[in-house]
Length: 99
Image 1: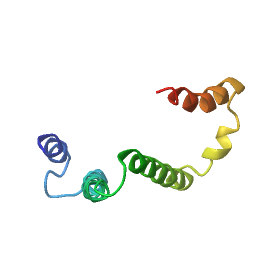
Image 2 (image 1 turned 90 degrees about the vertical axis):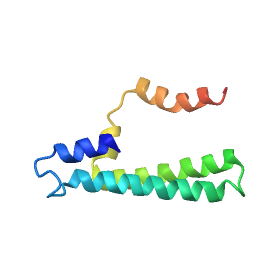
Image 3 (image 1 turned 180 degrees about the vertical axis):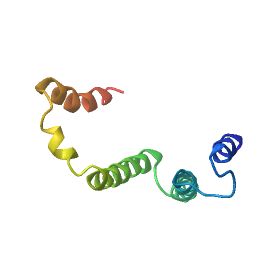
Image 4 (image 1 turned 135 degrees about the vertical axis):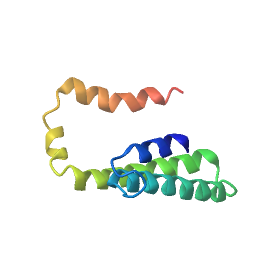
C-alpha cells in the first residue's frame, strides 16, 4: 500500500488527477483480487495441478489475443528468427518434463 501511494502521490497532479498508469494499477489489483476469489472457490473441487493447467492455458490464450491487438506485426517479425532460436524455443518445454 505504501509503494502504490508513493507512486500515485509522486505524479504531477498528486491526488487531484488520475493518470492512465493509476487506472492500470487499479485494474491489475482488481483482476488479482478476482482471481484469488475464483482460485479459492475452484480449489475446493479441482486438483491443484489441473487448476494450474487451466489457468496457464487461459492466460496463454488471453495474452496471445491481446498481443495480436497490441502488436499487429508481431507474428510477422517472428518469421525472421534463426534456426537456433526456434530450436531453443521448442526444446525448452521438453526440459521441464523432467521435473
